Amino acid sequence: MSEPSESRTSFSDLPIELRLVIWNLAISPRAVVVQFNYTKKSCISKDIPSLLLVSREARAEALQKYEISFGTRTKVNSTIYFNYELDTVIFDWESFRNSYPSLHMLYHAECCRIKRIRMSDKTLDYLVKNGMRDLTAFKEVEEVSISGCCGGVVKSREENFLSRLSDWFMDDMNYYSAENSRLLPRFSCLDGGRDCPRHFWFRQWNNWAGPRGIRKMAWTGMFMEAYINLGLSD
Image (cartoon, rainbow, N blue to C red; front, side):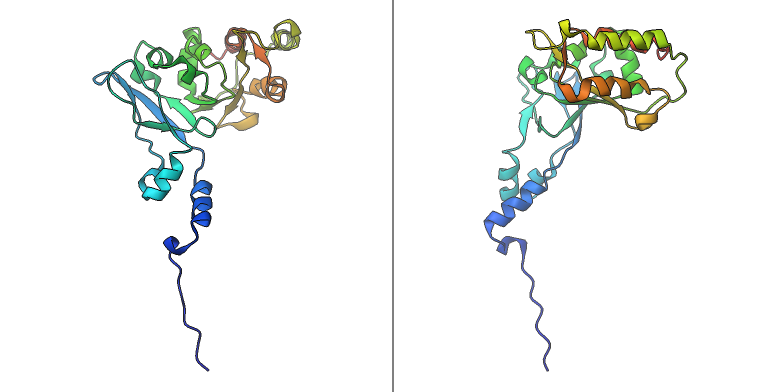
């Protein structure tokens, strides 16, 4: 009895509807590192969506999901592709020197579309010491994740202060949408998780803020107060 011959179907032989489904399933969340090049006076990134390099068909499908973003006020066109619904931006704050990413971005509307930002624990400390001014430009950020946790237990767990933090959250006079309000983002420590001894208070912050889409006029001020009062600043 003869064995059945093996046949292989190449990807290009699949129905186009199936190929397009596969291309779309291949689009996944990315962490995009954005630096500032002072020679070109523009934002740059080495992170390119892989589908843009596969084939014309894959590229055409991917370009429906990605946008050219992080343009600056120069004649140099941006080459950074970004998906505002899926991707996380990691600004290389040191490359911006004494400036801030939002100050270089051509369109303020782009700042308001960014939903996820990742930064190092060192960068967070730097931003707190500088009034977290740049984060106020990203009015719709939903998640801020911290990497490179410095570790160690916080110097203080002042119950009185945590009570004050609770009262601030419950103050409904400042909760919901006003023209200049900002979405209250969730915070996470990528290294220590929910039980990180340094960022234990993120859990309470997220319990109040996360599910409700709370908006605050100046959440950064309370965040800095918490950070400093809990002894996290160097």
